[in-house]
Figure: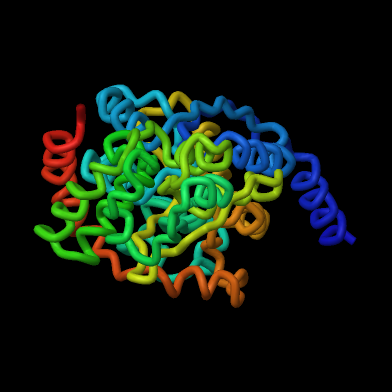
Length: 332
């Protein structure tokens, strides 16, 4: 009887113990309409955690965090590109944490090392968003590979994200360098530049502009096109036959001096959510490739078949040099 009473009291203590209550600041590069779904799902799972979200493109987020390095404000980042996370890793701003269900992630998306520095959410690759009506009106042929975009028939008909501010733009350049080799890739970009009307701040805007008929071709990602197509935009997604670059979206805890343990536990809860079945489902619905192995299917397999081999570590080491050369050549 005593054992029963002790067990009963213990279970009552667990059931009646207060839920985690904390407030955290999170920087995120997730597109606003998709972020709203993640927010709602996280809040449903953790109603007592208050999250202040600060949203921007990946480049400005990384720059902001480096500026705040000596006194980090954010508790975590959510949905930041691997290209950005590698910069934060070099600055020693990431705190290791193995999320619940981390072992359910695809191995190629995992953080290297014994203690994971980030929790993958999804992956996305490059695509050409083509407005069918604009293509027909201007009698434009469908590009089959990347070099086709250098045809003068596309002069002023292409929008591309800037690699300085957009992780999608940087991903494209990394992909071209991997695919073509350095000299040929830069020659390609010089020829492509003749046809580019504008370099946008964000990775989603080229596809949005194509959806509205403001351009014929927007270099972007399938993940940004899904909601536009559902709304009836006359978009066709073209995957170049020579392959595409790709990147991850992942979350990470920021290393900082904390006033209490609750904020760290709340940041860890965000990592657990990032690896969850629910986060994977939302990523799949948005057109991303979920990080969880259980979401493997023919559609995602087809998308990954176009992914070229990416050496993320090598690209990271050359990042500053690549961006400096791009600025010198193409910033007007």
